[in-house]
Image 1: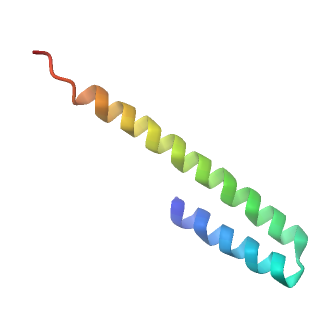
Image 2: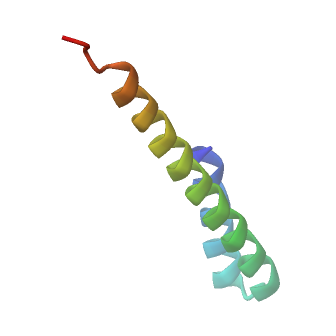
Length: 57
């Protein structure tokens, strides 16, 4: 998922440099959403791993 966020980020930068502001804004929005979804999934799995790794002794 971070791979796709990086791809959309690069597309946004290139489109912005070439003057396609509408495409750049759309690609940047998609990249931002994908990044935050990836961070949320990471935090969920981190919490699940910490809970599963607890010992009962």
